[in-house]
Image (cartoon, rainbow over all chains, first blue to last red; front, side, top):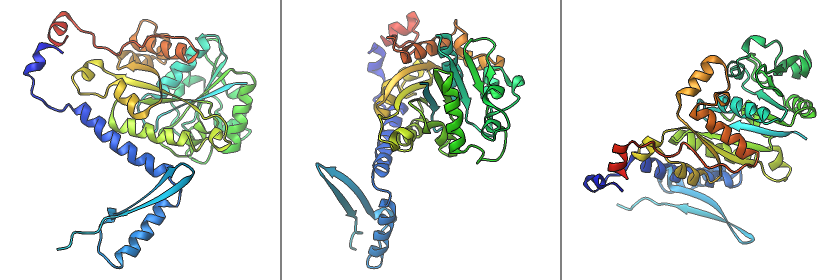
Length: 84
Length: 268
């Protein structure tokens, strides 16, 4: 590190921002493509069913398949809205 | 048995054709009989980059349709011995490439070539899919820039699922990363993703880094694969890429800043 660096303000560089954003989006897209083909449709159906009872956002339902040893675990996350 | 190498990226304009031309010329110069095939139907450009655009008579689709045989369509490169070019068709019919047709052409080329380099079109449509389908190796060309890295990751997903090797449960396609248009000075300033950043996100073997260079435009202006411009940084970087691909150990060059005395004093 050059001595001028000591005078530079602690500021995140655009490259490190790019890296963080890429890590998030790439991880999410990999997750989506490693799952079975029916996952997006399943996710949409579950969202429809939940919406018959509760008004939730588009992204309130998250469906994931994880592998644990010999088992595949279907993980379903539903975020309900805050009660007023 | 010929080895099939696809040059792919997902995103357009990152240097696939430049890389295909340089890589194929490098393999031929190293003594391997090499064919380079343009899969970009409707947007033929490899012929221009290779400087043989005026010698195109028949193309890839003519061969598939039986209107010409491979020997009539292949253009023998005048500079580099053992190098042939199969130009893409300029048809607007996007279904012109058929699975069986591509397979037959590649089998035909495999009879008297050691390497077949497939220059993929951008995107993930039919042409890109067929370019990668039969591949043994993939050169994934990536710029140190968010959209290019993301698209490369998408392409890596396709290479591991939508190729012959994946579908038949053989050893996977060997993936190699080539980072192009790299500017170490901008990386130093925190304005550009570094080689390490891109490598960490895509986590595949790094075959080479090609620096941003005026030599690339100069070479394409004159229709010469940039690897033949031996005095240039980009030409030397591609020479390293080919040597590494063929199993030689070569230190990575052009990835650190050229610092003057002033720069050294103040950035150490």
